[in-house]
Length: 637
Image: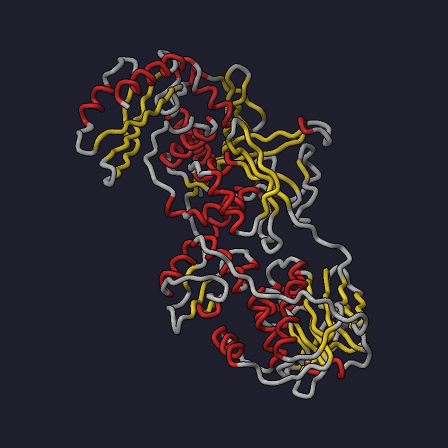
């Protein structure tokens, strides 16, 4: 967005330098895109803010930030003559939400005054004549595109808004011949297109020096349609830029009255009452803002008076205040029509914090204890198994769990909305998805191949219309190939499984083996732990996790531990070593003491250290570890 500062200062009184104004815009979210030149700011517009594509919209935010008054320009308040308008016929109401027109007669088309030409030139537009320049000026000023056409060039006093016909052509204002299709919409005269809707006007009804009567329009169109048409036709201009955002239909009447004021001043003539197609008026949104939400998102308690004043400066209307114990708790606000980007309460909070200044939010050390660990135990165990299998020389692969439907598998889960007929079900085992990877390795000349996958398999074990029928099971699949005899291959596969059991400290006395066909099933208390085949084996992760937690088989890596984290804050110049040693020896039930992380704030001369204590659950229950943690916190934190 280009902001000529001389133009901006028509709406706000500020004595700040161009760089200071640019800094304020940066704080508001409009960063400087190019170096300041000739008192013109070129700002980078990244947010979905349609009002920031207007000088007044940018001025409003700057005025709120600087706490100065916004001066809006004068608009027409007189009523036009009755009759004399053009008839509007809309055949595609899904693409045209509002079409506001006004007829002017007896105007004089001439060169624009110097101030108007200077404004447009500084913005980057070429002045043409007073009528066209006024429509461009108001578009940049308020953000709603406008279009003026010569009434004398109309075959009849009617504008039809319809979908374009395939192969239909129009010559635009710059002389380019454009071919249209029925995904677009046009303004038509006598069944001939005269404007590409929301994009650009045609030269057939262009305003020139001989024009005395015009029809001025300001429309509100389907945002997606305009965007698609612009991309398809490869047309990008100021009109498209604004319709690419969501504009409120109310903006058309504001723009029309502002343009009327300028036309009467610079071109004379008389005007008629407007013809306004607006079948489904869009209301103004009302929302509730709570003080609690502001604090939750910012960590600040902002004075309620400052909150209400900020909202009013930004154009919000305060409808009702909710108080409790003489304290403001919430406000019902009416969102300004030009803020179509405001959808939820958090958007209003963001507005308040922008004006308050994100840089004014104080930073502070984290003093609270980190939240409780929520990672599921089986996920942690899978990481342990990954490390173990890698240590055994295997390589991990991740394959797609979506497979083709198989009539031979009764319990397969079928997808209702599959992307293709070849990918329409979920796997019931991982061997079928991992085996093709082995084939790829063989094609590349690998002799010894050891792969594993950690994942899930899916089955439906009951009526398909019941949620309980569907099962999701954590499994691990291992496949081994070495190009040797079946015996050597089976021997190595068995060694890998026993090697994994050994790492997990699962002894041969902890399970029994039963034979089922070509498979050996490893069981513990009738629970299946694994299935061993000639060149592969399947681990049932949840069952194996349970086995590792039974009796003396528990090892340190997966032993039931309880961890407690304590945040200790000390002066930076005070050694932490003595404190750490006192914590480590505070209670003999503390099995391990480690420093997890340290944060240093040189500004406040503070050090925050996160210390983790480990206990064995069988020795120290949770309630006891909490007591120990509380005692340490009271003494050292």
